[in-house]
Length: 70
Image 1 (cartoon, one colour):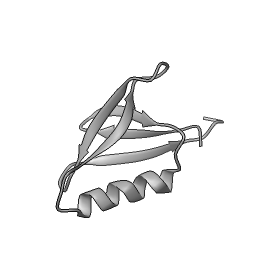
Image 2: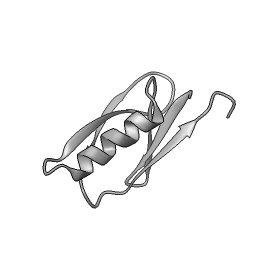
Image 3: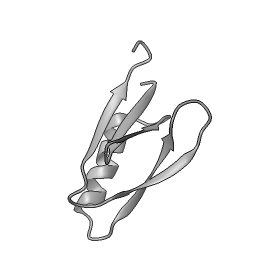
Image 4: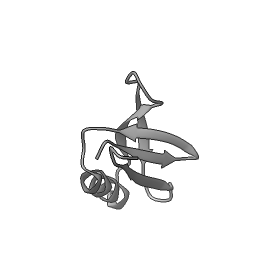
């Protein structure tokens, strides 16, 4: 997996160096938790620019795995 795109509140972010299932599990656990949780992501492409998105019930998040061939 080259990277993982995260769609959150209509905006695209990315995560690299992690497994899609690992990220999905982190999101699932955060949504089921009574305490909102932050997920570290990257804004844009190229140079890393950190952003933290808040995960909690009712917030729509999509996880898209991007292969090296795409």
